[in-house]
Length: 228
Image (cartoon, rainbow, N blue to C red):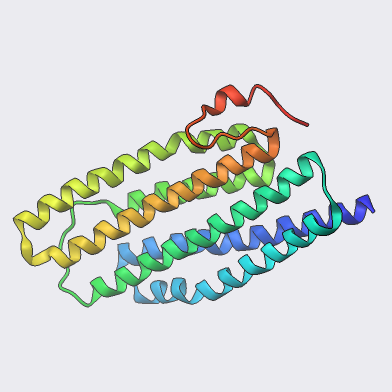
């Protein structure tokens, strides 16, 4: 029975990693779509949304069945609960990528204008956070997950700077207001992707060491108290 249960946990993890791959790819494509004004990449992001949504439902069902039938204890229970939360965050990462892709397509129908925001750099940082959080999940590495939490302030700072610079641009050049607002929303979408990566990292820590580091609780204080 234990071997069967472990196989079910492995299968659950594999399905989540498939979903993670789609979500990561969506982020990369929407940012590249912006950088290169590439409608094909944006269309690929939008087209990936149904697959991500279907996987979210499948993973929720698998995890729910395990909770209902196996009565897992301790670290296995935390793993399943973490998967449920990570699943939701990955679906929202996909949603944010779709939002960006749609904004890029809108901008491509407008006159091109220089924007004082480095969306590719912000996208690379947010994407790196997602990738690092997922690697921490793959390896069951709470310390790696904790490093992801330290990057969130950088993404927040870049988003705040984008708001200030784009607000000033709108005042100086009202004719590019629509383009600037689109970029402002993209920056916010990327900031939200960083938030979801932070959530994933927190869930990895919860799974591995049994520490709840949400709501501003310092991770380094709780990582000292490992739970089997």
